[in-house]
Length: 156
Image 1 (cartoon, rainbow, N blue to C red):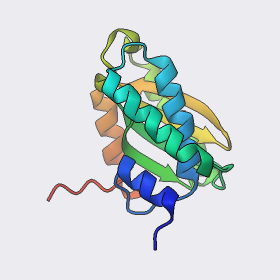
Image 2 (image 1 turned 180 degrees about the vertical axis):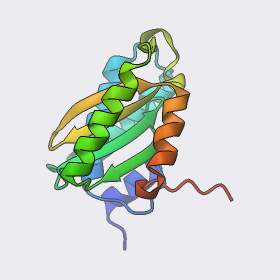
Image 3 (image 1 turned 180 degrees about the horizontal axis):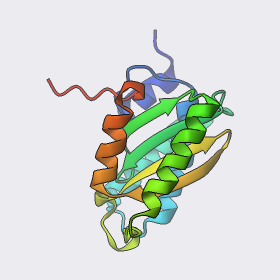
């Protein structure tokens, strides 16, 4: 039988498996997104706040030291990778910093939140890197790291 926190996460996004760290991470990421965007559709804002209220009491300090997510809009999780080994995390972090440095900064504040995807790297209890990314980078990361993605993207 699934625990209540798993059922709540299941309503938020489809995953191959759910881990308790996802609660901490979603609370952190949703809070970040709600404070960053000032032009959130009322329905999206209310839904994100409802998710936060429903999961915050289940939040515990993360067990996995290194984690990565890609979130589009306010709460559409398109990529999740937990339990990244330190060497892979460092390589990923450096590769992304170099790649993103080659591009102009995305004008995220002026865009509808549903048009913005953000990559988050978390270490312990903190977001250590977040970058709004262009669709080309979203594709590059999602395809290049697909074997690690916990999100279930079945279409058929």
